[in-house]
Image 1: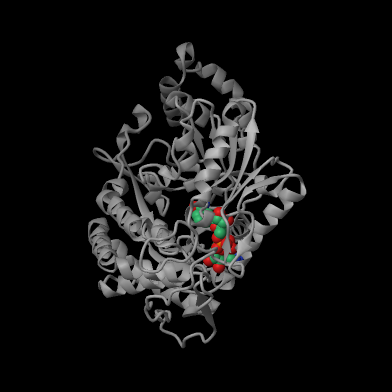
Image 2 (image 1 turned 135 degrees about the vertical axis):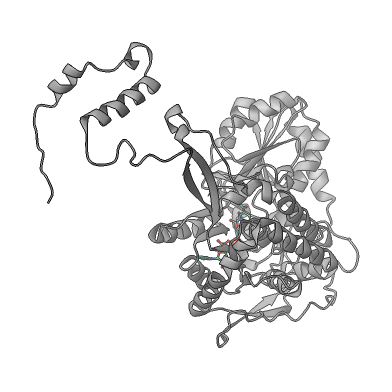
Length: 542
Ligand code: NAD
């Protein structure tokens, strides 16, 4: 059972700062601490008109932001990084207050955001630099080629509730450094942390190109209807709706969606480490992470030993609400609806013959769900096919590596996976057989903090990726190709009007000589060329 709720450390006044300049919307959303049910803040439910006005303002300020250049923009991000650190303890309390996380889970959000700010601030200039490719053919040597990037003016970022401070930072930093103005619409369940980010951006005196507008799904829809690029993190269902809306507007989008991440435990694994790593990978943030381990396939030879160790790990965990000390490992579920999904998945599995090895029920008025291990499960059960997003670990015995890979790939999702083995080369080999966007060998979540790698899902887990070097910032830009003449200009280029057989022949013969192979390089005899032109359809325009 959780500890008795301790009166929270007061969070800041959480009214959404009005950055739209219009008469404020009056509808409000109460934000609750899911661990206590207590209201911890209230934010505005912004209307479509407020979104349109905010986007209009951002659009007006963006050219100046773009014009100051990436080096100046990086200075602002560094100042923001300082602000994050200076306000770290308070921000962590805000995160905790609206999520019901443990201190341990909440404490990572600010340092991770700072780490990401440094990643982009140090590298954005290099990543955005013009490219000057060599022409692909000697004929092109007459031109100097420049490939440059220009930002989408306004990037809309719509985020979920599981990492309320980090989720907006994950994508806003790169978009801002690219030169875009950014509008964040955080989850209506946990908007307070994002509001703090907007407050921080204003406090450091940065140009007003970062706005947070709170609200529900309708506010999110209005964002999608007005911005120039949509970066969405959330459920696959909402992602599909956003993709359809973006298709109508012909605007680009990037989707980070749900997952059902498999863990594969091979017989040569360090079983103690695998059990500890999978317990953490499945239960961090009460299992409410897109890349949580949601199903485990264990080679039969080590199945019993692994399950015994895993259950030992899980039983030892302390669940409840932290006071001032780090006394718990697992916190609350973010919403009652999320708790209900876990309850439904356990009930479905048990009804179809699964065994609960530990945990198995909600408590604390539906605010918590016990960390749960299920055995005797198969792919007819929801717990192995649908995203749970909760503290549930179904474990399946498999005959061998091939069966583990087959079952791991038997999912509509393809976000990430873990492989546990004593042979790292084998781990890499297995990784390359998995249909997922990332594989961590002998670890969980390692890719989430490896910004040099892209993070993106395959199949129903998303489209596009975040981070991963230059691609992670260039995605917020439109490419622009520029050709510049070299040397003195001719009065006319050979292919300009009027049409001329001689010049046409000169150009096509040259192209043939450059591009063809062997004897095909030679020009076609003029006679054959003339025979091909049998009809004369010449018409002179007055
Ligand atoms: P959700 O899809 O219900 O909501 C996400 C956001 O979209 C919220 O801000 C919501 O208000 C907004 N929204 C809802 N309908 C909208 C619409 N039609 N148009 C625009 N915006 C709309 O997701 P959730 O329950 O908040 O988050 C949990 C989900 O997020 C899980 O599926 C999880 O796997 C996923 N997730 C994915 C990643 C990743 O990087 N792949 C990370 C975290 C969470």
